[in-house]
Image 1: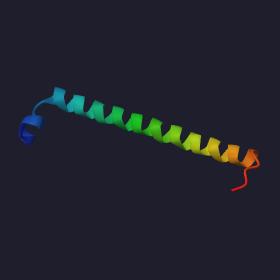
Image 2: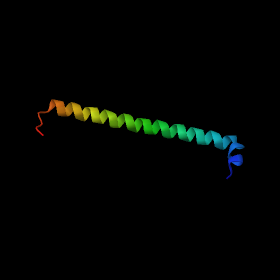
Image 3: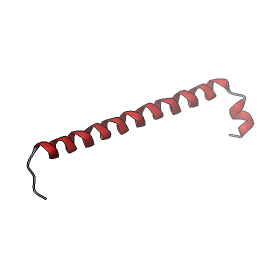
Length: 52
């Protein structure tokens, strides 16, 4: 598919745009959950007397 064909298909453009937006939301949720679990791990390390 050429660039001209892709641009001339507004439905496809809309689908691509919504798919990329969904990917961004999913990646954001993954980053947030990883950040939270890292913070919880640090809090647990502070609470528990672990000697390293």
